[in-house]
Image 1 (cartoon, rainbow, N blue to C red):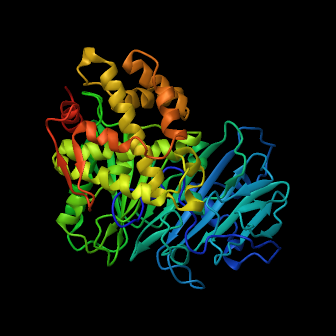
Image 2: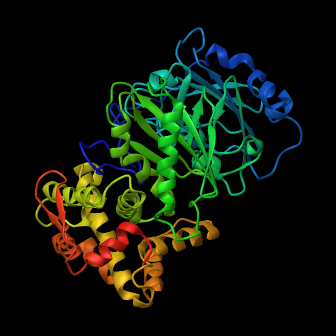
Image 3: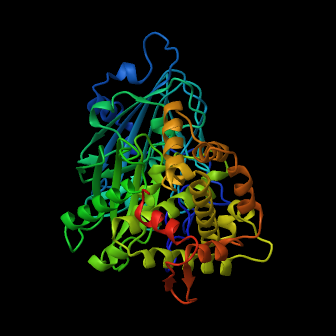
Length: 526
């Protein structure tokens, strides 16, 4: 995830964004209420879109056994229904099988937003339910249909891409915000999703929507309504680029070229011939009117295929896009696997920040001095944010509460630099050409083949394999539990990076002991 500090990485990205303004907390929204009139239309939404008969969608006929099947029909209303103007998603969910009692919106509705859920049981009786502050909802036994509206225009505009952002007829929203799902999704659950009333861009291809795995509702990713994606091929991958919000002043072609360039930069931090790290991905640029930054914030969601969204400064020019780090940072997240332990915070962000810094230098979009200058600035910014006695491990656990984003991001980036240098120095047979990026690529491939998220110790093993000897566990512990950023000045000095102490200005000393290795990092390869 990328932030919004004044300069350089320093706010959350892989571990989930901190609650935005008005995020729910400390309130109760329970109680029964009469189902709204639009729900009493019976089977029209689901049957019309999916071709289902009412008897089937209401659970009539012989009893069903697992696996559970969840059939979502989403109707896009760009102008909203007559009784509630504004972009709205109208959702009907048919539950084929035994409905679990506990359901939730993985991204809870905001405090100002009350969602009424109409539940139909097997006897055709209607029950009104409202999710609590944590997005949880309990349904009566025998539930066969759930129906609700997600008022996208009301939920959006609060600095939260997952809850929604858009303008005119093009909107982006996280599936976790508007798709209700079982709190514990039963093993073997299958999902179907149909959308009526709009061009759209979803993480999955259209021909797969009728039969998706359970992960589709556990990690549903970003969804675009009112716009279609344009495909570009990068390193053997199919990237689908979509826009949300108002049209950008420089036109879609310029924005698509910028995003494609950022994606190509990711190839420079992949082993030769490895190609782009995923086969396909959805990339959404959501216009933020008035902003001169190329991208003030971005976020990756680990749907399958993955999807990412980033704000696009409505007033950003070509130079702002040249100076941007957010787009390539988010795309570099695709180079590593999702992490299931504490690595979700510090390791994911450190890897994306470090690899994206190298990618900008290797592509030529930034000069080496600009790239190392950003790192030198980040070290100073991270130290200024930390307190005496702070460690990377401790701050990563409190990153949102302490708002210690720069300290965590840059502390983790320096840890990645130290690991990269240690691998390259420890494998003389490759003349320093194999390093952290090769270990990360190996880890990504292994995790994907195993169908699971990775852990910090998995990266440690991959680094040891690259170096040909065990070393990484000790170095990781040093950077996690030692004084934050303590090794940064010595590392930079060895590489010949002399920080001038202001802005992002550095001098590069080609006579320094590690200058040759610095050149390898800047160029890639030997």
